[in-house]
Image 1 (cartoon, rainbow, N blue to C red):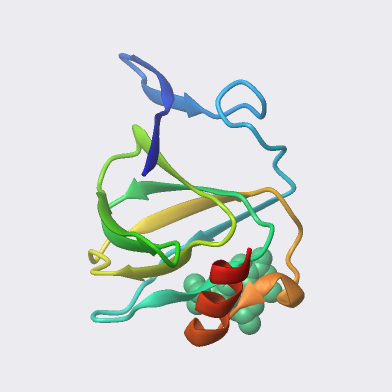
Image 2: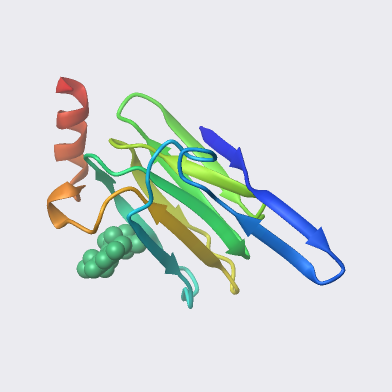
Length: 131
Ligand code: TYD
């Protein structure tokens, strides 16, 4: 489980947080996307990436992330914008238990490419065992 502390400056005006490539994370950021307006009971994820590195931050609310690299499973609840979760290539992830007000920011190392996905768990498992 790779959790990082997000740099934050808080003063009377509020909070300012930032992430810098190479300083805070060891990959360059090529893409930013976010999840919001999640509907009750909805799950996301259910895939793994071949080459993509990602940093997930729950900017608001909370989400549970299940991770599986084909050998070990782990689970983390992201519920503070002060902590980021790095997800490396070849980790199957399931995002669930989104709170009503959840906003999850994702910083990604590559542009979107459907070829980078494993969307079938058995295919992922097979690939993880031979890699
Ligand atoms: P997906 O990665 O499957 O999201 P989730 O696992 O959270 O459901 O993406 C959902 C859809 O959005 C899919 O059709 C691909 C598209 N998409 C993009 O076009 N660009 C992006 O950067 C992302 C993350 C998804």
